[in-house]
Length: 476
Ligand SMILES: Nc1ncnc2c1ncn2[C@@H]1O[C@H](COP(=O)(O)OP(=O)(O)OP(=O)(O)O)[C@@H](O)[C@H]1O
Ligand SMILES: [Mg+2]
Image (cartoon, rainbow, N blue to C red; front, side, top):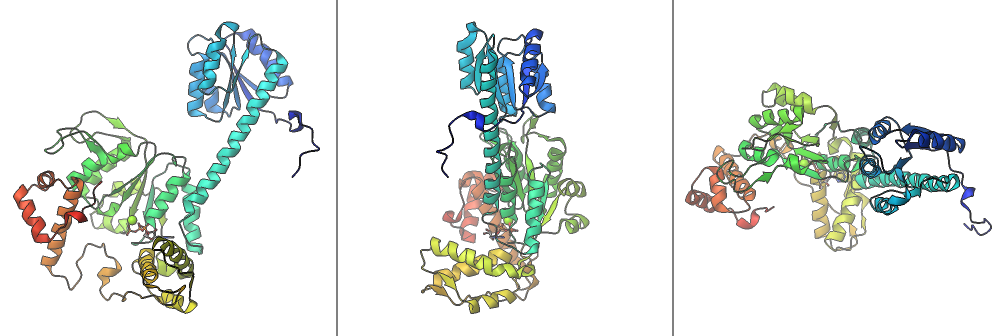
């Protein structure tokens, strides 16, 4: 669109009345400014000190703070930094005497919008304020656009347009902006981790850290030091201070994954931090406080775990402020074609395959499969088909045999499959413990042995016996 015929001039876009807070310890200055600014159509509030100004800022929205530079107690620069910290969109204009111009210029470097020299000329002040208000509106618009973009980003990888998924999106939107705890429940592979990320990205903590802990992967002692950290020398092997996940997540979101598997001893400690916001590192005496939003996830029905005495009721109620239930894939089969397309594109790129389309006939059998592993299972089926494909069209998916044992339907119910002997189950449990200890200690066998409470030779024997490959260990 051409603006050529419109002469330049800022009067074209009228500035809407803005809310301006005047801060000055001199009454005469306050009164004069109030008269002048109200006449220009602005809404004016007055404060005689920085502290009073902060009170007002806390109770109402202010577009521009016009503050004196030299005031007893809190100076204009102090006020500036407090405002910029808490209300970054609010503009600050500094009024200064001739003697302090240089320092006022300095203040601009730390975020003041502009400064005016006292005694203030009315026209000049109004022009400066007008610019500040425009800038403030621009910032506000940018913030709004950013929020929209981050919402789009947050849901970018979440596929599904069935009513069941729309219910999930609505719940995510509703809860994201609060700092309420969220409980994500649903069978394995339904997207709990994906949704936890979406909640984080849509919250006002999006710029803070997103930290995840798997509560079922470690024995109680290790899990506690993982969550709360430990002090140097807290236990044998604690060779230096370690910041726990709660500390790492300060100002952000902590996802407590597989919450249903958390050892009962750890549940007690978790409850304490959730109730008070305070905790101590293992072996520490200092009380620490953090600002963390907890999103817990579980593929067990926690209510049943409570009834069975495996999960603390008080902790359950504390965390279950807002529950989002992820639907199993078989309850939203209409989403399957969308998911297939999404995964085909993703894996074709990843594996450099020329697949461009999927035959309808290949998709229909997918619609009637029961999908015990939900979206994760579908993802694997598609990936395999893409890898095996040779032409531009996928015309066949290989479905996993529908399992006969109930175990595979809920792989983490903790019960062994019927055809598994006790020895096999124990061996697998032992293997997992050894692997986790090695992972926790970054593969250092001496330390892993200490963690497990066995000698180094004993650990070595187990590694051999269980056929554990050091290359299978995930290092931090
Ligand atoms: N709605 C969805 N759209 C696209 N991908 C999805 C969706 N839901 C899940 N996935 C994909 O499926 C896989 C499993 O999802 P995720 O890890 O979030 O499941 P989960 O519910 O945490 O499972 P578990 O209980 O086993 O930990 C991931 O690769 C994820 O990207
Ligand atoms: Mg998960």
